Length: 204
Image (cartoon, rainbow, N blue to C red; front, side):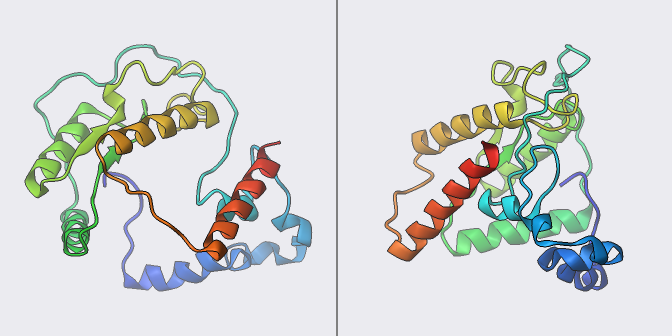
């Protein structure tokens, strides 16, 4: 909502093939590609196969502690600004989910370097406006150990922090009945099982 590049239709057409086909993104290095480029499991480098098995999760166990220990969520009445077109997209997403009767939960993952109380206040205002819950994990001072659970001084979590957050969100979803048990086909079950095996292979 607050960071990242803005994409218009022209940029979307340009970058879509790069997301689908890695070689398009690295066209200048195409001569260096081999089968191993797509199989190399490396804990500290991006690889294409693991992104599929982990559904976008980037597995990192590197620890680089946050240098400061002070509270970054200081109370204020100030609000952070959101670009109008981003807010418009947010409203469209909320409207579509309500139309399809899909529950929505706004979540902010702990990030000591990128999140502020001003941003929290803005998202809280939006959540009240559209009538959806907002879970800001930056307010939970007991959840993350910034000496051990970050890989880049507080910007992103490493795997140790990610496991804590995943467990917390799972319990929250169960407690608030935001997910239901569903029966899936055998074919789908096999695919999920294979993803799990690939993930275990990657981290071991």
